[in-house]
Length: 178
Image 1 (cartoon, helix red, strand yellow):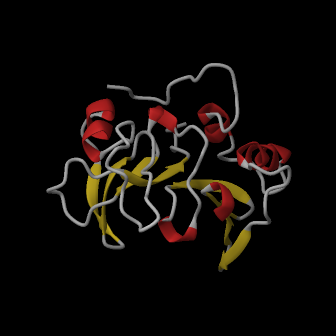
Image 2 (cartoon, rainbow, N blue to C red):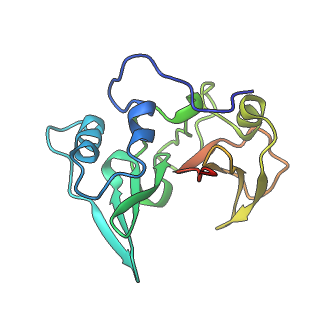
Image 3 (tube, rainbow, N blue to C red):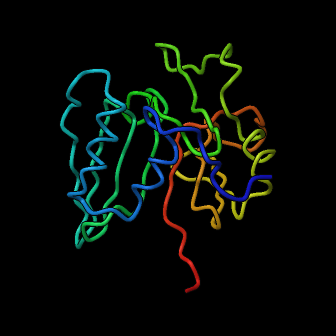
């Protein structure tokens, strides 16, 4: 069982290590823009959709690359990676931490059953061990690992489907006891 994000070879397009390194950066940090650009198919990624939640939270939704960045008081506090078609996002094409792969959907919104490389609730637990917590939010079940700063939303409304694939990965900085 892995207890920390694996180191991923040399940084490349959408590298998982580069993604995690963005947590804690400021809104104006150039690394964020370069990372988003590395995910975009076109030379210039589309402008993010911005949503504010007073008093100090702002989301930058990069729907064209499957990425949402949550800033708290101007500091990147959480990152969300989306599967194609979830909440209007195009699928995240970068590398998710721990080698997790998100669902692939057909045009009708059904999960591609032929996608054998996708991560499921079962494979996540096999890789990372028993979660700190599990539950249901927004009609979907999730597993959460507090010590790792990650939550996996699964494409299922109940726990009976061990093969439910990962539809969203949420990442945050783990507080250290300094």
